[in-house]
Image (cartoon, rainbow, N blue to C red; front, side, top):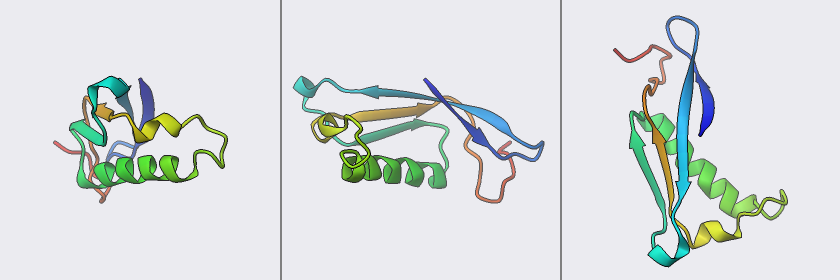
Length: 88
């Protein structure tokens, strides 16, 4: 589990993000996004995975297996709209 920060009407909040990798034997590839994610957060997750796949070796990160494995990100609560106002 990882954490992130979100801007809200009350100042800010912590977001919990659960991530898992599928075993290569399952044949699963790509990115699955679940939970309460806004469009901006979905796009950010896709961009982050693309960046890792493209630049991971340059950054000396062990990302070679990301090509052959599915990535699942789940945000249990709280996407924040681009305007910075918390969802109700």
